[in-house]
Each structure stands twice: as structure tokens, then as C-alpha cells.
Length: 211
Image 1 (cartoon, helix red, strand yellow):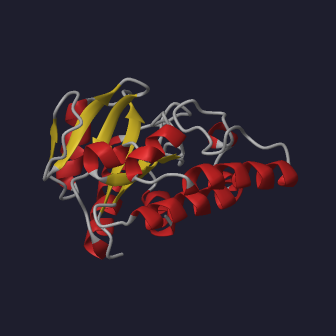
Image 2 (cartoon, rainbow, N blue to C red):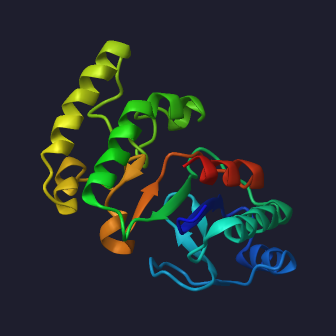
């Protein structure tokens, strides 16, 4: 776990900001409510989210200490009574500042090859193109193994043609993909948007490790 990372935990507005912040403090997590913002901060923050209500956003984290902070933060939301539904998601950012273009291309190729396997870990609402906020990285959801193989080959060719990370934006013009390249140009990260909404400490920390 040497790569730095951050998490965004979306939850519904069925609890108040004050309830969430109080519970976070009780679990040793210092957090602030900051309205609507995309700025990276050195502390945990709660921001508004247009799709579901609220989002708990971590600072830049690293290693087992970072995962322990994630576990405590998720447990605090659970203790406060935070709820999620199919509108919510869990987003994980990974530091890509020192990644080469070749490394980034390889990550996207691996994702394309195994997206159907990762889909199997998720509820139906996060598979294929079922969710408009985390669409498949393939041109469309494949109808079978042969179709998947053909679509992978098509996307591999497009990725291979990229001569810069900026070119990847032409392959994926929207940020609402399960694996998002657009976060690189705002935060110098690669963002995984695939996971369904959850406040489970175990689900979140296992997913970060897997990614």
C-alpha cells in the first residue's frame, strides 16, 4: 500500500451534517462541512452531492494508517445511521503523478479485460451501463465473451494510438466511466467510480486493497 490514495463515500441526507460530524469526531476523525467544492484539503470534509445528498471526502492517505482512517470514518457514518441507495457510489482515487503513459495505458487495458469480473462483485445497478455515473469503459456492454473480446481489441487499438495522457481524454470524453482518466487533469489521480454506495468499513477497505 505504498501508493497514495483517497476515498469519497456518498450517503443520503437522511442524517444531518451535525450528526455525521459528531460521530466522526467520536471516532477520532476531524472533519468539516465545506458545502460544494472539489478542492483537495488536508482534512476530512463533508460536501454536498447533487446525485444523492452528501459525500464524505478524505484527505490524501497512504498505507495501513490511511486504511485505518478509512475504516474509522466509515464506521462513524454507520454509527450515525447514514444510509445509501442505488444513487450513491464509492469513489477511490489513486496517485498517478509519477505514472508513465505506458503504465496508465496498461491499467486501462487491464480494466477493459477484467471489467466483467469486477462487475460480478457489484450489484446489478453498477454493472454494464446500468448507472449513468459509472458507465462501462467499453464502447457498450458486451453481449457475450466473443463480443467482449472484439470490443477489447477495438479499445486496445485506440489506447495504443494515444501519444499523450491528454489523448486519453479523446478515448474517454466523459468522466462518468468506471475507470476515470479525467481526474488526472484535476487531481493527478486515476479514479475508480465502479463500487456501489456503502458505509461498510470492510467493503470499503477491501475494495481499496483490491484496486
